[in-house]
Amino acid sequence: MTTGIVVKPDPAAANAVDDAIAQASGASHRGVRQVWLNQRFDVDALTLAAVIATAVPGLGVGTAVVPINPRHPLLVASAAQTAQAAAHGNFSLGIGLGGNELEQRAFGIPAGKEVTRLREYLTILRSIRDDGEVDFAGQELAARPPLSPAVTGGRPFPVYVAAMGPRALRAAGELADGTVTYLAGPRTIEEFIAPTLARAAADASRPPPRIIALVPVAVTNNSDAARADAAKALHFYDQFPSNQKIMAREGVTHAADLAVIGDPDAVIGQLLPYRAAGATDVVLSPFQTEPSALPWLWAVAAEL
Image 1 (cartoon, rainbow, N blue to C red):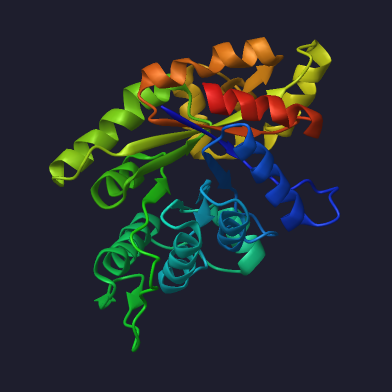
Image 2: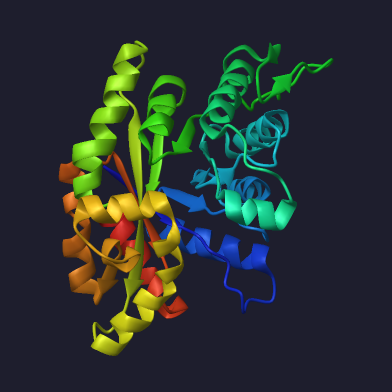
């Protein structure tokens, strides 16, 4: 099982890119082999992946994840190939459907046929990745570039999908290289995600997919107050239907119950079950963790 770490620029840093590079370099020096970058509305994850790959040679970089709306797959394929060329084969592209409510508020785009769009998106990405060209017209997307979309040194690159529902998981198993989960506990991975992905991949005569489990981790002093503060930071995720289904399956009531919260010894014990559940990779996603505690998390990611 490979273990990585999510790098999140410190909002208090004077320069977000410099801070991310410093974190990635520090993690690499402690033995971490892969760092992952979130995409929100601020720092561009694909650009940052290429910058980190150049600044820290040999370190694996990936996005977890880039929402596919409103980014056309030709643009994402271009950026992904550029990041792969910068990383010399150590880049991984993680994409996701995103949250419609958030995207409608930010970009003013209506909800569409999400899984249809995801399938078409993956079809275009795979065509460019595998063949260096694309000529596609679907219900939601079209891609017919008049010039080559291939980037020298930028192919191939693995594609992972943040999929939680059965239809999206089947699309990931059939058309991608695996899935990236967030707030999915060991029971959900073992009983639902792993078998759904495996069946879809087998039906499509594809290799077994990878399951990259992003686990939110808060290193605290394990006091009731510290745990309560950490739990508040994840309250936002309680509202999403996909997370509510996972919480029901795991038998918990809040998203925070799916996070790893506690002192260093408690954190290690809570991470081990993901391996038995079928996760091929575990990625520690720090939150409510003081910057001074990050080197300890890097050491865990290197040794777990």
